[in-house]
Length: 156
Image (cartoon, rainbow, N blue to C red):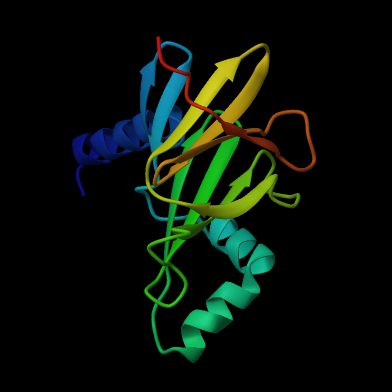
């Protein structure tokens, strides 16, 4: 390999390393629309197996594969577990939300792909939409998410 090719490869590697983690997000005001569209790292896959082993077992028992997809935004990591055996049309697919991957998830529940992170009042809120219901969960500075339903504003 020539020196110029090596130089180009090293430069590309440095640019990729400096770019930081990959995340699918679109920022609108204080809200970021995130999408679990990326494959997990080894550490993220280990965390998914550690905190949701029964879901992997259920899918394996049904003979169905589990697709693990992640979204990252700042300190927030979202891991979606997708499989015909563990997802359904009512509760959606299992979702694990971490603020620190070395600790237990702050949120564990179900969600479709429409995830929103809202940064307000010095906190991070996860907004989940499942059919007609909307729930918001405070996920920053807590060991377990504090969730509450969001009621739409009443008419005029």
